[in-house]
Image (cartoon, rainbow, N blue to C red; front, side):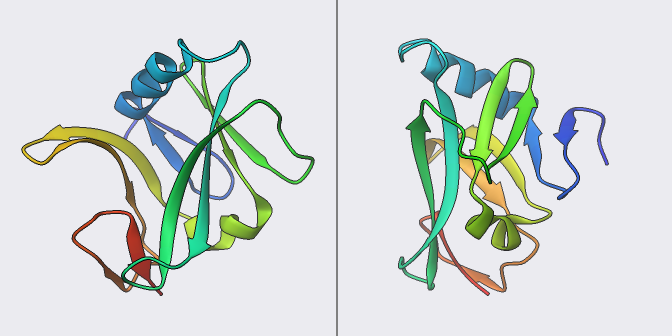
Length: 116
């Protein structure tokens, strides 16, 4: 695995680009704010990624830290996100967080919906 990824025991990685963007977003939030990534039913392909800002870590959350940025993932979402990479991209269709998920068997063009 690339040395520019912060990886935890569940194999979830946060890239340096994602960490930089998280820190930028959190700079305008209350001190201690963290990015919460979760999975919910819905979207074009069955599941969708949800990105929220949270002030508190729940007891069962996994917290990933990368270059000062903190990402929270709830226990329910962990199995669906295991082995994924959270990145931030700036391309022709715009800027966004992008999750590369090895568990997904299908995805939608929106980039936030996937199937298993």
